Image (cartoon, helix red, strand yellow):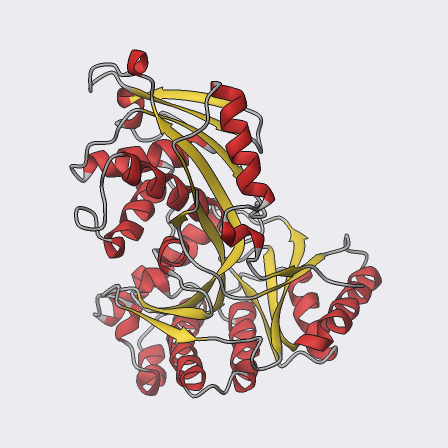
Length: 410
């Protein structure tokens, strides 16, 4: 097989098919061209899973797959009084058009489904004291849904970037480093999804050719060089086709377990537990499941830092064992993998990957494998054969290079 190379290209230039679909969709729905087109990417988390809401460390990079928003201010006739103004949004993916006003935006949960993420951005901005102009939007996306690649964060980040530009909220009024928290607030407080801040940070703050080393407490970032092409490497992404459900009670249960454990250990968050002190900390916990949850978070933070150290030195191949150890920890200690992802990881390693792991919140989604660029097809074929042997539906594959975060593209 020949895998698609997802390396940005036309997408980043603003001339890609998703950009055209959003632009043309806006024109068809509203009869005029949009004032602009904005985009935000999905993400792959290289390493650092379920560490973000524990005030820990993560290392995502942005995919070229994007959610694109074409938008304009509402027509003068639609510009109602501030208390009654509204937003009209069309989604290519669902084929739906929704409309909501300030009363809906100010009442979390009043708009549900995909529209709740859009209304949530308006709510979060208004709650933070920013005026949000009435607007019309058209949305198109090629970020896979339910695959653990942060389609919801891409939607939030694209809408946020569009509305802040339309409202004149440039970096001087709303700095870029404050925007991920607003997008996260939209998802937590309006859509009701208890995610950490990693996904929104990656979608907004990533740079091409780099991974984003994020301290989820201070929100400090470092753009760590991750030049796969120069090293003759690629990240093979396997969409396992296993359903991915963040809102199922399991994600919330893991988060609650971590918060209880931190309380039992007398620390604000599990980030405070050094890996050298882990044995003593585990001895203070009352049961084996809690000990295993803590062990994953503490060792995962350590693996993120070790990965960053290697990447700073350009030793990309050497991160492979850390990726694989991360997967084992998610499987055995955090218990968030499913058979499809475990089979994909095992097969990728058997096919010659330097390391492989599930990426995302778990219970389905995608696997990433660090491979030689010229071996990507072979590794993919090995995974495909293993899926056939287990009777799983065929997975899909692409190779990815790190791309840029949210931006105006047209």
